[in-house]
Image (cartoon, rainbow, N blue to C red; front, side, top):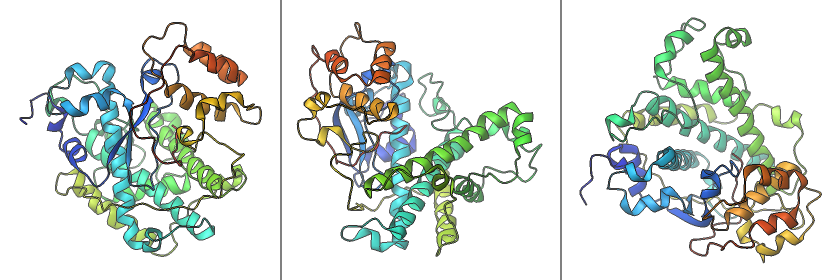
Length: 390
């Protein structure tokens, strides 16, 4: 099919990821309208960095667009949702690609069931954090920060970045504090990885952030993201291992880059990422699936880290008492439960109402919201282990 000038396939990375087949894009039976309409901020698609697949919502702008990807994107991009979802799929693909590359140095993770012990948890933490840095640096810092997507696909988009607000035009301002600072070089990836693993970004001080609003907006967010990503992977792996939630002290412990050849792995990955961002290399992914043996207990459901739709009689889960869940955990239960239903009209369902139900952990009112809604039947449920923390 002929690709029209306003098609997102004119963006090389988008074109490659949409057409590749080594990481299949799985449409799950969930509804994104809940997110579009601001009922809750949680994406219902889910993600699992270790299973080698990408996920989207069956009822989403992205999935409706896919059969028409060669056509103009304008009619699909109301509210910039198509561009946002499309680049998030690219981001998730780069996540998977980075892990597939690093698995060549950790081949034991590719065979059989992987028990969670001190070594495997350490290696999986490392793989996850480095792959998150890889996706962010390649897409946001090396591609979107320098590229006006309207020059490739003129759809009057104001989209400038996915997970980072960094813009290359601001680099002179940052060099007031760190004269050696340079984003557009492969060594920047190593700098970001060190920051994500330690929580400290060399060359800038707390006083620098206080002095410069742009620096604070960008680097302050990176500090927050670094902590959040370590928090996430350590909570998730503890959950899968059947352990208690990690303490704040355990979460704040740096991820060790000195173990084995981890520094060399990061350096090699950075060189390849740089070539991908420059259009000199395609991110061909080796299919993989890290088969983690889960020891989570059946009576401890944490809906931040488990796919509700894989549970028996999931529609009856609102009949349970969730007083033991935190408000945050219940919010993810509510988001997964509601997004399994088609939202045609918001009606009386408002963000404020859903927020009140979540705060009260009120399963009766939650179920009542869906009494006139139809469950989404089309789509593939996906694996039990999906994560929804955003």
